[in-house]
Length: 458
Picture 1 (cartoon, rainbow, N blue to C red):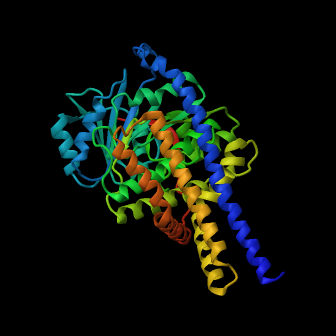
Picture 2: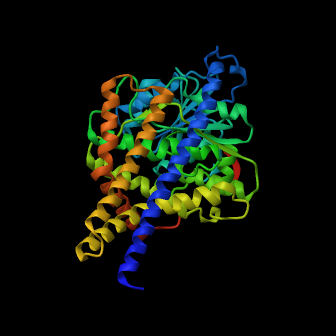
């Protein structure tokens, strides 16, 4: 085979890869449109007075904290006033620092409370459990440092209710957010998890001003939010976006709970729950809630954006590598035969493939094997498809929820959707490739929490 034939063969393979990547996400967006159409039909019932409060399953809300910030009291106060019939709030102090605990003790009049602590998952030692005299449904666990996953597992041990919701201290929530998350559990007994993605802008704060936040926001709309909704239609959402999760405690414990070895414990847990339930051949559903019910602050600098991007890529690497048994496994269904290979090919190694494609094009141009018109045509097609995919996500967001009533906000997002595909997308691929290489060089076996026979500690 001549060098010219080999070059053109590689070029066509790269072109096909780009087409399949974008076509796959366009199809997921189409599935999302179908799901949102069904949701619109049910909004008539949603808008009626809330009548089934007595049927709602009680929920334990878990809030792990590691260091003192001004958000701790604000986040706890917001959770205490959620609009839900029956729930408890468990704050897990996972820091050696005393300032955060003392702030909570003072603000909520906490006192040590001797109660039975049912140990189902092995965690770092729990030093004390406090209860508020002002809010009977608030408890605070003070424990030795073990990380976010360890703190959440301690919260699971202390929780009283069959469903629990994991939260981040930097997440803002709507008062009715638990109602949205609990609805799939009411409609289908097979549901073991419902997930909602955090948006970048709340109606109160408006559109972010910094370019780093806007780029993150458009990137989220392009490949995370509505792609997750599309995968949810197939019961194959493996990579859960950051936000809120409502999980069935029994199913989580059976799957091994949160892994202390994962970069993003919640993301890896969702993938593992798919694998475990498929291996056990148990009927289950994991649902994605597209409604904007929670918000998080987006990266406020390019340095923070880089860190967030690399951490997310390593979270994907953890989730897929630790659950390879799902890939084309027996009874793996669409999760193992469609979603897993798609994510493996386009999300895990995709950034590295894209970087290699750019290097190949530059080398071809330098050697004269690839002509400038051919290179320009390829880049034009790739950028155009990227812009269309970004615009598709933005259109779905605006059509479904109309979060940005100002014309100036829409124009800004359209501009960012265009600009993000020229320069930022390539930089994003470089960051994610570095993250993947770093992860591979430093990879360690995931450390799963040890399930032990329940016992009570008084």
